[in-house]
Image (tube, rainbow, N blue to C red):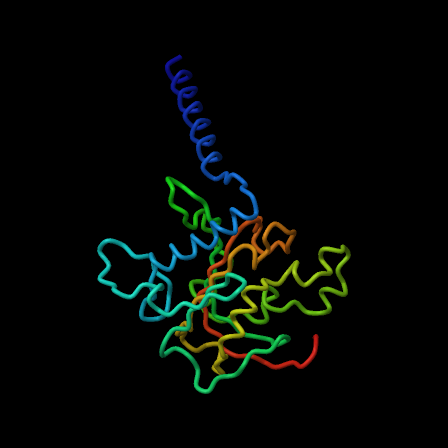
Length: 240
């Protein structure tokens, strides 16, 4: 009898815990205008609370860090779309290769997506989810990512109106900012030295539209933070 009572008590605790987790993971939808405002505020907060380590990796500032240079102090540039990019000094190729609209790129990248929310009158990025991570993963660059450029054959073979659109696959704000950088011409096996940061607000990513299933989660209202190095670009002058 005691075992039965103990089992029921533990089961009750588990149910309450699950309900609590479900509640915490649920983000209340706000208006598009409010979400856009939250995205911009959260991006500014991110710049104030993160820095780059010696290899260019984004790190969160802690009370014990002896770091004086926040991302906000690294000359971030904000584009009219709301996209923010930072070129890391001393980490750009010289002369480097310009990146075209149809290029095949090789990208070493760590990318995380977030929802900008307001809690206790503070707006910040929350609910972090990994989008891509070749740095902690295979350690070699991703080749020809569809979120930069999706092949014409994919669109031609699509079977619905949504999947025939480039916007279903590509992250427009990422494309826009990445073209501000130049590509290296180094082997895939080379050690990385990250070039910079790109922050894409949700309105310049997938907003509230349907999109390709990259990672098994919805990117609705999600902003993206990219930390990257372009190992190489192969030029194409037309759709491929």
